[in-house]
Length: 487
Ligand SMILES: *Cc1c(COP(=O)(O)O)cnc(C)c1O
Image (cartoon, rainbow, N blue to C red; front, side):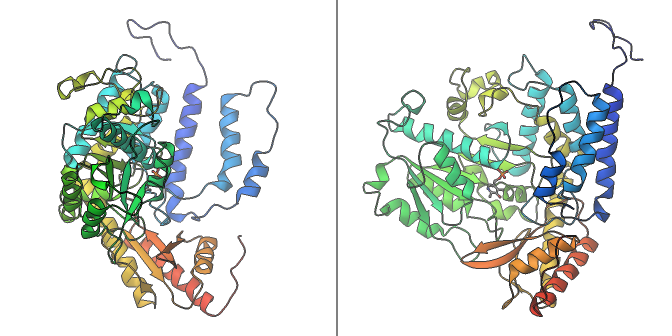
């Protein structure tokens, strides 16, 4: 029986909290332990999952223990092993033990992470985790770091701050006047930007027609010479280009090839044109934590805003990302409804809610802090380096088996073709087989298989087993054997 410490209000009476929390934590741990041996794709698809959950809202209450038992039973067959070591579709990352446990505590503590009065510890941990991230990745410490749901939200925050800043310089206060009467904003972005940039521009009322695309080099990185050309000349739709408020979107980590834009050249060219330089580095910015790969993000400190996922390569559970901005006043002006506009020396006065679109939200910083503490500086570097080595192992194993590797494997991304065969049929057969999971992608008009290695738990044996499964599916596709149905 817990005793009430001095100053607490009332003592706890017996309630289901202990048993139900312990049950959920134990089940989550059992699930995690089962992952290396578990089928990777879910046992059932959406139709069966819908059937399982298809019931009427109960009229009365249910015992919490029974709620959790039933939830586990209903959900189990529809749970994908995406947290496991052989899920290579998209860049999903994993979920480190301490980070996952910290997220459980965040749920238990249920802090409203709006400001320091409501949540002093959650506010402090976000400040500190933000400081660690900036230190690790070579981002200036004066930048502000808001904790958001993912890179989609982070790109939106960065571009909202950019929009505010470039329009303010053009004499237009977008915070009060909106876009009505504003000069048209140019957004200059690589032709292989992530689609969330376009979605953010739609959300911000800029629309996608404002995008002036920049050509990419053979591995998908931006052609800096073409960036200079587009900024100087403008496209057909942007006469008087150089005087217009301009945002440049750079990318660290092409979602297909892993390629990095030249951040130093990109930011310098942007700034020479008075443009804001935003870096979408959802997973790629973590390369900055590795001494062996740091050269890929050379010049990262020159950007004006950075988009960074924690739930991908840092292996923090969903949902978790940082929106980092070198102009705190612009980030606060774009996001806050309570803080006064800030100057650099007043940074201590902003709260977590002043940097992000959400007002009340959960304490995302605990899990980010825990992941960084669990790994340490060397551990993050090792995680990144290991994933990249495993990606190269994939490429070598598949090449030996007759595949064509289409990209230059600069980090953790591998694009695969089996010329003359239907790669979507191969992906479907691999998924149905259950050994590993990978998906298809279209890159430069070509249907390809894509592998992303981003989980701390993946081993060489996992890669070898997965290579064998992919080659087997490819051989079957070659012989025209139909894809087996889902078991
Ligand atoms: C994954 C990704 C995004 C979107 O991230 P979410 O966390 O899913 O919102 C944006 N940009 C890049 C480069 C990405 O890899």
